[in-house]
Amino acid sequence: MSGAHAWGRPVPPKRVDLAVRLGALELRNPVLTASGTFGYGDEYAHVVDLRRLGGVVTKTVTVRPRAGNTPVRIAETASGMLNSIGLENVGLHRFRTEKLPRLRELKATVIASVGGETEDELAELLESLGGEDGVGAFEINFSCPNVAAGGARYWASPSRLEATMRRLRSLTDKPLVAKLSPDVTDIRETARACEAGGADALTAVNTFVGMAIDLERMRSRLGRATGGLSGPAIKPLALARCHETAHAVAIPVIGSGGMSTGRDALEFIAAGASAVQIGTATFVEPGAAVRVVDEVRDWLAAHGIARVADLRGTFDAPAAQAGAPEGAGEPS
Amino acid sequence: MSPAAARTWRQSPARVRIQRDYGAGFRWLELDLPADFEAPVAGQFVQLLLPPPSPVLLPRPMSVAGAVRRGRALTLGFLYAPVGTGTRALTALEPGAGVSVTGPLGHGYPLERPGTPVLVAGGRGVAPLLMAADALAKRRRAVEFVFGARTKSLLAGLADARERVTRRGGRLHVATDDGSRGFHGNVVELLEKLAPKLPPPVVVHACGPHPMLSAVARWATARGAEAWLAMESVMACGTGVCRGCPLPRSGEARDRVLAEGAASGAAALKGNPDWAMCCTDGPVFEARDLDWERVE
Image (cartoon, rainbow over all chains, first blue to last red; front, side, top):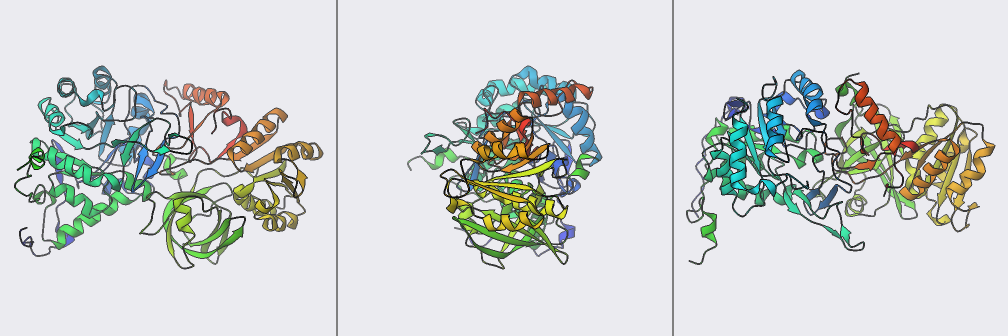
């Protein structure tokens, strides 16, 4: 193990530059809300100043409204929670006519999450929303674990991802972010496929497929057998996937998974993330994302780092594991 | 009113003021909150978050049993059963301990509805109805309070209910499944006997286990009475964003949601026609709003 890291002299927090770029989109800071945990923004606007966030990633919208899955939809597990929401959302029309105008009013930087069971559905969403004022970028949800069709497994095919990204790329000038599932053999393959298809950035990662059984009733604690696991339980898992993804592609990566503090966020940034998403922590503390912004700024100031972008990827991986995790498990 | 203006909940630090046994395995908890915390109405709930290190991640939805202003500060009372990891940990908090409270959340009972208010409590479902009895007493309205349990030892809060109800000339009616106290039978059987003697219309406000609420809802629908039922669900956020606490809408409610969508001039729907969210559409629902066949 090497000695202590050499940090610079503290700088005033106000002097810390938190701005980051995701392709053509500049964010005032690297902290975003994760899709599905912040509604359409306005639900929290009376307690969170949305202008203090790097951006709001809205609830995944699909072409038609979706009613969502049969309950039970939530089950708490050790340091985490399983969800089986099933992409309940208001649908494209209401998103465009009601939710977007409200978000414009709130002056939030909006990353609109879109989801589809097919390439055609995603294309329809981008054709409709691609020119809308007030949408800074799109996040393509290729990784919902809770739908029967068009979920994480359907989109786990690198060739399908690349072809779909290529088509979507031609439909809008706005940055496209592909949100990846962690439940693949090698996340570098899906990451590179999205990059090759023209993605401007990647989000790593969505929830992990998980289960919980009520033994007495011998049935799932959810309405379906499985759900998506989120919360502090997945942070180390998500951090490893994010690190691997960031080393596999040249485009920016947005870390996501189990973060609830500024230090959590800084770990992802040090591991290579350009920005981060706060999700389940918002259910515990509605103002969590804004607190994370403050904690990131204060930590950077105390450690003499004047620009958050300077911390990105500075994590000093042990040589044997850097960017080549499969090597770590091989007999030496 | 804009959607944002309608939302008044906030997250605030709170302190344990009183924590004690309430009988029948239940606990009584009082929390002191800052002056700017809006007082909940009966039927509303708050999300209670334990201080770190907590054995659970998510806050717990807690029905409010009392709200009193002391000077400018607000004291909230809760009646709870330590049945899970979170509520068991809650019992360990001594007076002075810090917690976090988000609220008030959801819609409470519409106590202003004209008619004879009949409060129907099953077991620890008595919590929001104690508060409803207080609110009706303040409005000088006499109430009929029906309190049922399996057996008399589970009638925790009976003395509190009696004190609140009789103060304004209301009446307390007790039912036990085993006949160990009061009427021998369940609350619906007692309701059936009582209702014809009351000045119409009868407006029921109920809280208790879902099978009991389902029976009350069916009774009210069959008798043409109004019934407002406080429902429970597992929740994550409690604020409407996670969509984690669905309850099945009735066919009538579904048609209403679809009609509202059509009336708005939009092809899209104004809400989810299949599922109501317990947290923001409820937790208090009118009997005709839910499909009781599918309520678990």
